Length: 185
Image (cartoon, rainbow, N blue to C red; front, side, top):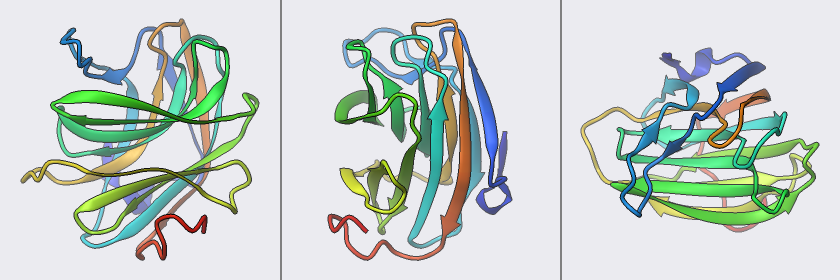
């Protein structure tokens, strides 16, 4: 589903069916692009998009995420994800042809974890927060330039398990530039 980002409700629950993901394995396995998601178009210019995320973790890699999408092989996601070590953590994935995967920090599995994506011009920043006030820097990256529109939104995935439900609330879009990439604000 695609809407204007400002039309997203402040609260939304997404249910990830079993064996759903958004990942293109760099080992060249077949892409998996079937994760449940809601995307919205964004205006030109810098912005910050954030949400408080709670995940009903059932299986490894179950996650709720914020997504920046410009095509099937050009996107980034910031996840509140359940690791193989049975820990919840902030995880980022950037896909430019193939996906890379980077673990951030652990967080209580019963959450919540706040996630934020910021457009800073042609580049992007991911931050996560355990309290919604102090933001931990997770990743700074660029996506390939494309003629496709930029879409931003919410995602739920359950790659290994039987499915999970993700609750997003305090969904916020602010059309202003992030003041400082690494300050925690």
